[in-house]
Amino acid sequence: MLARWVGPALAGQVFLVVAAEGELAAAVGTAPDGDLPALLMVTDHAPVPLRDPVRAQLWLSGWLSPVRTEDQRAAALAFAEAVPAGALLDVGTTATLLRLDLAEVVLGEGGGSVEVDPDDYAAAGPDPLVAVEAAALQHLDADHPAELELLRSRIPAEWLGEGDVVRPLGLDRAGFRLRIESARGHRDVRVPFDAPVTTEAELGPAVHRLLCAARRCCRRG
Image (cartoon, rainbow, N blue to C red; front, side):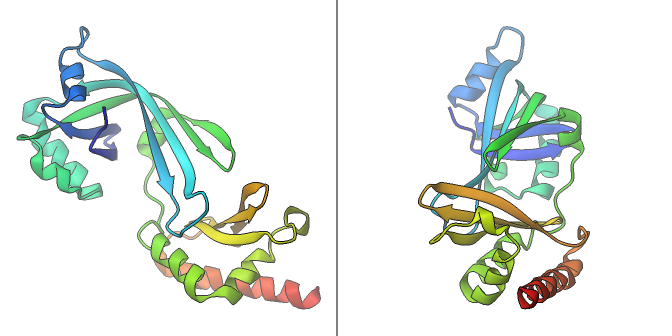
């Protein structure tokens, strides 16, 4: 049973769009207590081609319940403001909305996992670079090998082996994430900015300062 789309936390809630006549909607609709225990896994893939494209996974557990018919339009409009999913056009006809009341949130990345307080997850806003991250990483990967090599120079030498390949993995307010691909597997590392950015306009200067610092270290080396 697969959800057609997963929505972000909206007003402290998580919504799913599912087929109105599907197994999941039927199971929730016939649950004895009006809700259904559920575990939802969301997988985040890197925007550049990697040997293993998965860079993070999020496990959301709680209870699924139907959104009341009179509330579906407002919920769908709020959903669309954050994620304009085409499936929302079918809500009220061939699709319906379910709400996941969170009990536990676990984030797995970089080979480890951490529990996130459900209230903190619900209150979290999007990263300021979310709209430009994919294009920026793809541009770096395809067109700027010298700059990528400078970012590589910020990785401790003992973490790199002969023949290891370093690829861009992520970009957020705190800096870059890089993937070290080796014959043994892979390792994810962070190369931070000197200070977190708060807007897209701050990205260019932050990257410039980071690369300048890397060049100075390379010249000293």
